[in-house]
Image (cartoon, rainbow, N blue to C red; front, side, top):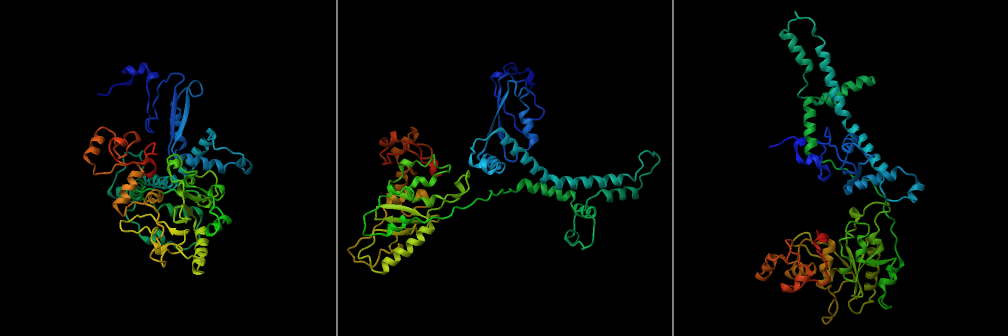
Length: 459
């Protein structure tokens, strides 16, 4: 049974209570919080000034013992940073930091308030016109005359002037004649077309439909073609030490730089011979933007001397296609080339081919040689990590699925009796993850280098 807060025992021990106030209850709610009380204000999308002030003013002694902290989602944080960049000059941009100040939050709140005002202007104007029409209709009635009779004709005229049309013909909405009109006449004719029925339907659409807010435009990076890429086609010279060319080649986890995956990708657990070109990571030139939406999909893979795997951009792959095909047609290869360019596609359908180990589709092709010659196929242990990186959804064989689970330390269903017993003892998590200290107990070969759950990255 609900009772007054004043009679509640917690009323006298506010310093030991935690209060949660949603947007509705921040209006008219007044608690006498003790001194040194702190509040966390959450910044939601499109937060306006009125709601912001109502929430903050629950701390009546703000600045005199009460304090606030602001928390926001990643989306709101990016909006505030973008608005901050627009408000500073070029000199400040060169010497700026990404620290968000109170003035940046207030600027974002006032920007939302202005946008909210513009969005509601049409509805307010339509409601105002509807109200004025009703006021004009009632002026024909003399309310001070007690002898006035409300005849059927009077009531009918009053209803006609106050009612809104249920159906508007298309010719009335879009077939206006081209005549000279004043601004007042154009305004009146335009907004008289909005009826109460249309407003009600529009409000329902706003509740049901999702409004997409497109991200701000960004500047793409200008592509750079490094000379070291050309050296990859040199079959006779000494094998390149890719570590010495850090401005051109980086380890695979470098692809996650400036993304939210950088902390979950487990950089130390990827194959040491997996590389990307630095151009593969460079996508946009705009500073301060998260690269999550601009993570380049892996499509072209160069197998260098059958030892190193390098992910390349389309520009780099295009040059290598021409060079490798030229060497192949000139007869430079007496045996299958140990450097091949291959197409890497994620398997997003059950019967889709991955192409990467198809001898006829490599560049140069690995067919047409003697029977004794065995082409190089990428081992399954390497393919599993490539599948993880490119977002493969389906496996071609049971061996692929087994290798994938072993790589991520997962125990899939159906489980054996011994694995089921380990699951009951909480040695296997609900998601199937097997920690390092329990791998020996359930006789399943897992990747020993995994220190924590890899599902945070794969999901």
